[in-house]
Length: 380
Ligand code: MG
Image (cartoon, rainbow, N blue to C red; front, side, top):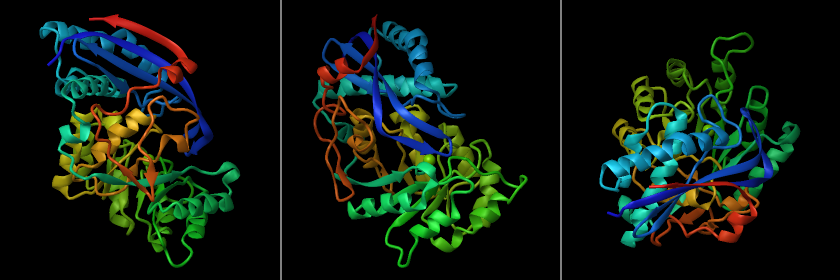
């Protein structure tokens, strides 16, 4: 194990090629917070998943940046000083806890320490994890089109089918659900179609009840309905899971290992969308995956429109048993205008799990310079 000499925090500003619209809001900019740890043997990079705008569950990039600079990175350095200069990657997640900011910031630091360890050992992340699948299936995501155009949605999904994606997740919201999904389900159904509501429905509230509204989707043979209700409402999701034929998937509700356990206890999800960055990193993501496997609940790896580093880490994780459904692993070039890290090419809906030392290639310094916004060096 090597001595931690310091942490550089960097912030760059990328842009989405097209605005990403969901029931939770619209994203245009993609600020990227990065951590670089420097040891006496190597360096390692970590990518923070936080987006420009936060949600009730996930913090925004500004907030995580501030927390990393003022509290989280200094805590990692202090922990290293206490342990003779070293903190193994497996122990990083345990330094953080509490809310979403700590988990998401801690996940970026864990990734950087892990990347440095892997580079020093000449090992890939997949090797370290014991992930044996050489390729993993990629699921595609389509946002709510501008003007809620059903024709635009059908066109976008057709283009993905043409590119041989086998599973497509489309964003829905009250008022943009039954008709667009029916339009996509022209007979015969050729692909696994999944609807993602980002918590936009309410059970038993004024207006049509969510269970009735979503029950109309049962006839369409969807692979699952993701996060129909608010993240905190596990009992409601349990009730919905009993009333609907379509499996209920949870995403935003699964914000920590304990929440995953609670959701499984409530039988609130038949499919789990696990996001390592939200759960606090690789170590808690593996714990969450183990809980899902014990419960017989298939999982897929969810993303935050990462750059190539975060996506490469996720591709290696997605090669673990338990991640049985295609994950959010499409190429960052599909949605970002630039990417300092690069990614394995995606072909026919599959991506090769990276095998080089570390998590991904080192970033292109010129690209980092082009989009540079801020940097801080914290010595060990
Ligand atoms: Mg989702």
